[in-house]
Length: 445
Ligand code: HMG
Image (cartoon, rainbow, N blue to C red; front, side, top):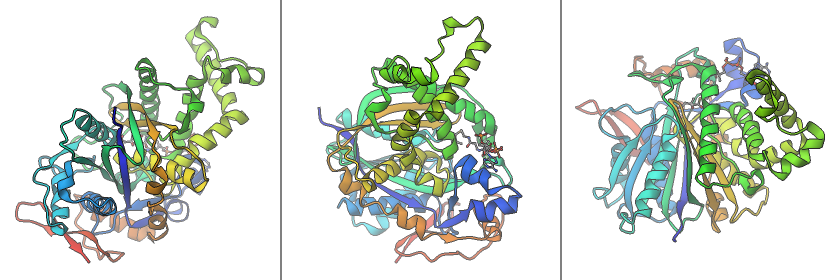
C-alpha cells in the first residue's frame, strides 16, 4: 500500500521574544529558576501588532507551497486547527486561502476547507483527517494542507502566563511523503474533563495542577489503547518521541512514566532489576495506597538510572529544543516537537531513515492520541530547509512594558493603539477591519 504522511513542514514563529528569566521573572517577583529549571522554558514567542493566527498560518503555508513548487490547484483540502479563533462561523482556513489567493494566480475554490477543535490535540486530528481523506482515495491526486496556528495567551497573572507562545506549523500531507509516513494504529484516551477550557471567552479558565494530572491519565489510556490496536511500544524501537509540550517540565514528568509502562516485562526491566528491583505488581500488596507508594519509589529510582537518562537524552530531549525557546503553541506544540527532534537528529548526524517516531498528542478537555510514524528517505533534505533557528535568533527582544502593551493589543476586550515593534518583510499582515467585522489582510513586499 502507498505510504501517506507528512511531505513537508514549515514553521512560523511570532516575531517578538519575551525572555522569561531576565524580563518576566523579575517583574513577577519570581526566581528565574522556576522558569528555566522548573518549567524548562527560556523564552516565549509572541505576535507583533500586525501578526495573528491568520498571518502566521498564511506565511508558513506560503513558504511551504513555494518550497514544494505547488500551485493552488495542487491542494484539495485546507484544514486549520486552532483554539484561538476569532470567528465562530467562518473557518480560519477561508481567511488563509483568501490571503494566499492575493499572491497566486489560481484559487482554492475547489478545496474543502474546515476548522478542527479539540484544544491542542486538534492539530493531530486534522492530520488524521487528511490522512484518511487520501487513504480513502477521495483526493483525486491532490494534497492536503494542514495548519496548526495559535496565539496561546493567558489572562495576565494567571499561572499559565509563563507558558505562553504564538506560532503556526503548516504541513503538507501526501502520498509517498518526504518526512514521515503515518502508521494505521492509533490509541486514544478521552474523557469529559474541565481542566482547561474557554467557555465563550478569549483566555482560558485553567486548573493548572489538575490539568497536569489529566494530561498524564489520558496519555496512559492512549498508550494502553495503542497497544490494544497492535502498536509496538518497546522504548528502544523509537528514534524520537515527540510529546505535546505545554512546557518541557510536563514532558519530563510524562516521559519517565511512559518509560516505566513500556519497559514492564521487557529485557530492560530485567537488566535494571539488580539496581532498582523489579516493578511493583499490585497483587504483591495488601492495599492500593501501599502499591502506589511502591510504584512512586520505583519510578523515582528509575528516573535516576543511567539507562533511563541515556534513553531520555537520545529520544525525548531533542524534541524540546524549539519549545523551550518559544513556549506553548497549543495545536502546533506536538508538531514543533516532531520538527525539533528531526532537526536535532540531523545536526547530530543520526541515521534515522526507516526508524519509528512515537507521536504523543494531547488536548485539554481532554483527549490524548498516540500513533507511530516512519522516517522517510528524504527526511534530511526536508528538515535541512527549516529556518526556525534563524527565526528564533532574529526575534525582537521586548521589555516588560512592551510585553504588557502587546498582551493588550491581542486582548479582544482591551482598547489599545500601539506601533509595531518590527517591520514586516515579504509577508501577510493584519490590515484592519472590514464592513462586517471581519479581519482583513494584505501582503507586504
Ligand atoms: P505554578 O504554580 O506557577 O508553578 O504553575 P510551580 O510553583 O508549580 O512551579 C513550576 C515548577 O517549577 C515546579 O516543578 C517547581 O518545583 C519548580 P515540579 O514540582 O512540578 O516538578 N520550581 C523551581 N525549580 C527550580 N528553581 C526554582 C523553582 N521554583 C519553582 N527556583 C503550572 C505551573 C503548570 C500549573 C502553570 O504554568 C499553568 O497553569 N500552566 C497552564 C496549564 C498547563 O500548561 N498544563 C499542562 C498540562 S494541560 C496541557 O498540556 C494542555 C494545554 O496545552 C491546553 C490545550 O490542550 O489546549 C495547556
